[in-house]
Length: 237
Image (cartoon, rainbow, N blue to C red; front, side, top):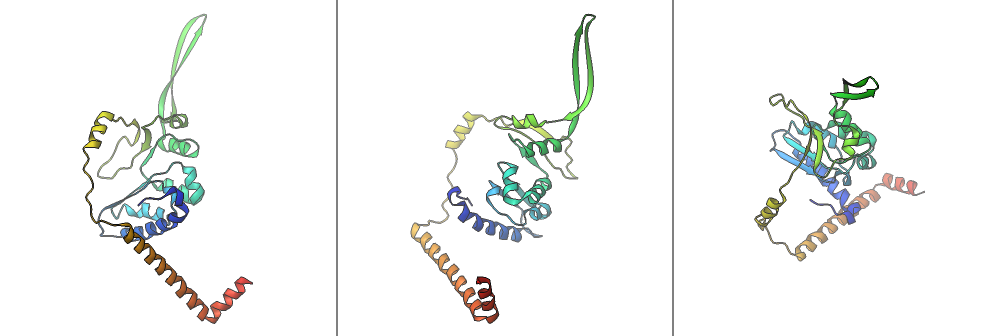
């Protein structure tokens, strides 16, 4: 599925409803393995996401969320919900970022012993002193100045597959010549079913008709109930 930035206010609620219902169906025991990848996650209002991330792993669901900045998540979901989502994710990969998200990632990566060296020059000669201090493995300033394709993060492991080095600071190096050659050799997606514009319009009109019928039935049921009618008039007043 794809959202449209020009029609985000119209498509967003529909996609959010679809995703919420979809996750309730797949997040059950004895289901097939599945992967849920949501790019530009902040454009959706996804109810129950924290529950999906927390319980989906036991039901063989891998959830991947992609956001531009944690500030967008807090703006659309609220601070408490945003912090719950950020803290519940076990694997984090961050590119160039600043502000609260850079500080949180730096603190989450932890501190390591780093050698500090100081040089002193005076009339008696030159002296070098070395000491070890606990410093952040990846400071905030480093995260704020990451280059394109450079990432820092932390990964989670399993009891059967213990990862000794969970934190990383790496750079993706692409061979652009090979990628350019591979693009020309990609196979086209097979045509499952040919759909013309007339069929799309027919389904669209059918959906509008079904929605209008649902609205009319609800209003008819409300107006036929004297108590409901009284409440409507009272609210109007």
